Length: 305
Image 1: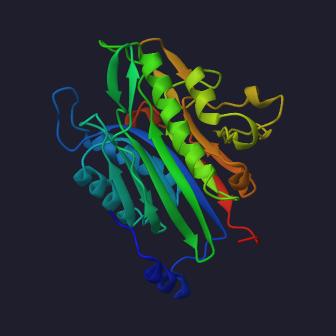
Image 2: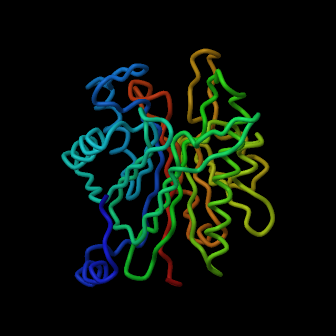
């Protein structure tokens, strides 16, 4: 993985390595981005890989969380493809949970201060112990010399039926473990800039999403990215929020579209959030790349660095 010690970070920023006033954070389930087939998944086609690249280039993210990434080799292939397209994201992370086929990955323009992978979390359900399928990626990311934030990325249990347990109960248990990591982070400092994002595989009012968002003073804010289609952006607290087009996933079996990908922020990070620069990508041929659409949120480093 690419992460830097504090002394080198100081040299990088003093040399003008990064001076972002605003930056973009995105999440994208790239649907089995594999460079070789497995027993249960085919390799990603060249056409699909090219569309994934084009969709990411359209967002121009500074930090990108990826779900359903293949091996490190596949991640490096995507990183190089983006570089050739003009988007340089030199810092990266790649973690594995119980699922050995697809993984969580992060690409970033900015270096990492601390890397804290959570790959062995487990829970007891119906008398059987389960390991979190894809783990959780936790990174402290240094945007400027004076501004950093923590990112936690997740890919919760899918909605496909499981032969050994109820999939919704598995997903809820994973969500509870994710919330434990969120609370641990929020309890470590008086002011914590935190972004929690990824494919959570459930809708807004479901028990897993409520568990991740939490309650009270440490409740996370749902940025709810919407299409840039001419509709006014109402903001996360507006009574009109349901009128915006926000779906991120197409489920062919039921022919349904739903919002199951999220970018959630802590109250401290919400102060940096640029609401009208937050959206879901609506692009031609989006479905060639994946059954998901990517979402992005923009933040400012602010004057209170």
